[in-house]
Image (tube, rainbow over the protein chains, first blue to last red):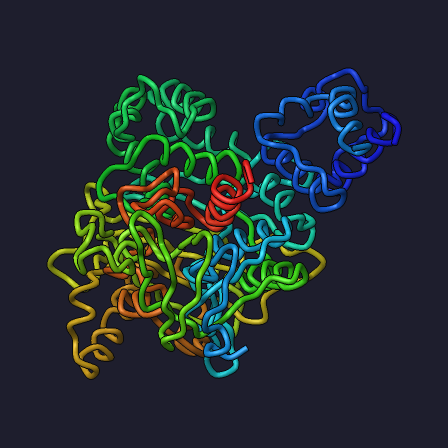
Length: 82
Length: 476
């Protein structure tokens, strides 16, 4: 799986958990929280869906790795390909 | 599944109570794919906020108004957060904003609606010398961290008096804030005050046309659609303990179930007393003292036909507003809340078929529960009339003859509250000391709901969500 595919997976999850947020112009390198109305409860849901849909585990201490789409891709791609 | 069939079953999480908090916690756990069960003593969900049928007519209990109302698309507020966490679309709640409400004290009325600037203008009109102080208070409340007061006073009375020097205005601000959620007598925690103030005045009131059952049904359906298990008429006799852990739950039927974690919405003291390692009188210093009564009158006309346009009226007729346990009487009729569920902007020509007038006042639990059946009914009839007298004294005089338009009436008392909520003392708002982190004396038993400290319907749901997140889903 490529980093772009992983980014799309994260965007799909955000669309699912926060249907009222516009994800079309999202910037990869900018923190998700600075572009959208997401809080820590929403990040918990991103983690929850990664586990449910893709069997990817993100331990709590690694939550900061999900800050931006770029950091998500860097952190999650090896897990998807493991 | 009959209760017996539950015997020896194991769940990842057991939730005690199918009120707003329990259902919301259940939805969060079901969303995460947890094997959870909700256990409810009664045959109806909703807990403090429920409804019942009498002669084919449905009556709401609890909900006068849903606080925390914000229009669709408003970001970062409690209502928006909770809908997202439960994955329920905004429109499903059918929230219709209030017409307008007021606080009515001797010689002074203050109107408010879902636009805070109107309330501000009312205070500027009635208390011109206090308006700067009020604005400073509002700004402080807007930005306060309700869960970490830092150097601020803990007493809300003290905190408010730093800004407001007129005791009448102070009481008029406290009256609605206390009536809609304070478990404490006379004063409140300033953080709790801030949460309530925001939910009433910065946000606002709304209601679905069909009342609280719309919200309960949404939660139930969501939980069920995710595969969640719920058992009604399934009271809990005991929580067995082993060392610092809850080891099993014994149901009224005698069946035993086990769970890795338990979230209880039964109340702080009530939950402690279920545990077999605690004495029967555990935590007796944290039992709520405030209980309430409510009369409901049904008319064959809309309230506006009588000239009654307000949505909610918070009233006090005494010199000082007293929010405390009623000592010497069954009911304290000098303050209360009048609610017209008809007076919301339902839109599209929609309206309730009949007119409803609900009046809430503080009542003495022990005195009501000590009455024998005949006296109980006689006292209900007497106090119904007394509360109507107070109410009609406050409302504009109607040209219509009320008696010929009244088609039904009912009343609940602290005895009713105790029976249906299990709250000791019939204390609607639960224990005065809230347990904000939801922790108990046992490692795997947590509290959610009224006694965790989020108030109102939206608060109760947020409590269920945040406790499920914090204690089960985070770091899972």
